[in-house]
Length: 177
Image 1 (cartoon, rainbow, N blue to C red):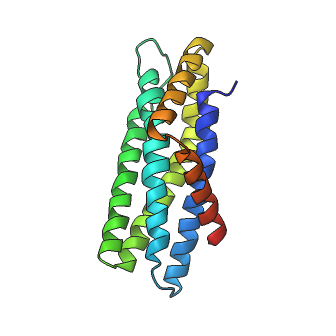
Image 2: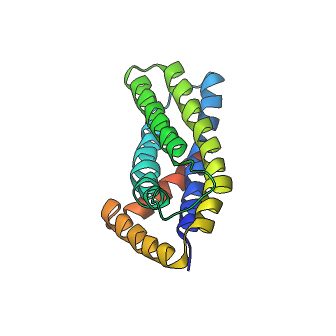
């Protein structure tokens, strides 16, 4: 049986593929390539739906809520920082969208890089600090209950093949750049 943190870690790998692709795209833009709006629209759609609506929703509404309960004991609680970083990432996405709408290549680059570097650091902290703390703090019964909640959240947020659609987008963006 996979744990909730193992599931979230697998999802991180798909998110990192898109982030690495965006960094490469920004490098090419800075080298003189024209702004490829369709690329960024696809990347933003992936971020808003897979990274945020699908992945962050499970973290925020299931894992973080569980870790914030009085019955869960950790030597420190980094949840407020993780939530702050999720919100900061959402602001970078809004900045990318604004840059696209204004056809402002520099604004797109600035916000795409901001998002990419924030998420690389954020994922590192979750993988190496938060998730090990969660695995230690949550007993098997709680983990099993959370797995059911994860499954229900996935069915609610991504019905009928939506997850596969975004996994294929992550592969497409990774390969195309």
